[in-house]
Image 1 (cartoon, protein in one colour):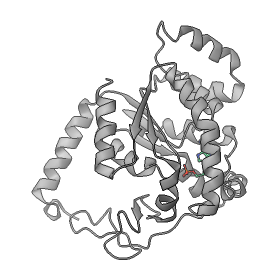
Image 2 (spheres, rainbow, N blue to C red):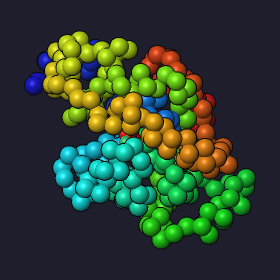
Image 3 (cartoon, rainbow, N blue to C red):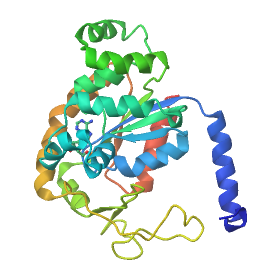
Length: 278
Ligand code: AMP
């Protein structure tokens, strides 16, 4: 592949993106939303826009299951039932990933934190101010040693949470979104059989300009993307999301976005919310 294989417009856009990245300030973004709310689709766009790394605990766990690692063996049966994997396992994933050079300008946490103890592990790293001083002290008291390590590392490296984006979608439309979802495993690109079908049935799109990244390979359906497993996944979400959001609301970090719309419309709303809180 040589430079002449890229269109002038693509090269210019990439140069613009990199210049912006060079100047970009720190962003620590957390995406919270039920399964099928669009976290996995919006995260790559946020990653490019804010030059941050994308950490999906769901993707990391699925990779561990596929590779048959110790973590994967522990997580598989729990994931198959749509339940939550123990906090210490997912905290370990985030702690390792966030330390990578890719996260130098910030991070997007997609599907994490999902419980209050997980939120305590990263949530501590919000900027301290007068308003949340009391809250801060009570959090430190409650902490267990498992979380102290992650939080210490984040704090030392000043990896702070800046925005918590809540994607709101009514439960009634999630089943259609989830059961029609198809994924290109290597890149995580998502399609939907009805709302955003691939050009060729069940195959990743091929684009001549960026053919290194878009492949024509077969798409897969996630084992837990069924109506049956969606029920416990949604139950788990509703049980834990409110307390997690309440945790961040105390710091004024939550931006709630109506995500029951087309991808670009939702993306515009997310960007407006994040930009208005610099
Ligand atoms: P997701 O891809 O985010 O929908 O996650 C798929 C499954 O992975 C979930 O149903 C959980 O079993 C597990 N999982 C992902 N992230 C977490 C997390 N932060 N805490 C506990 N379990 C998780």
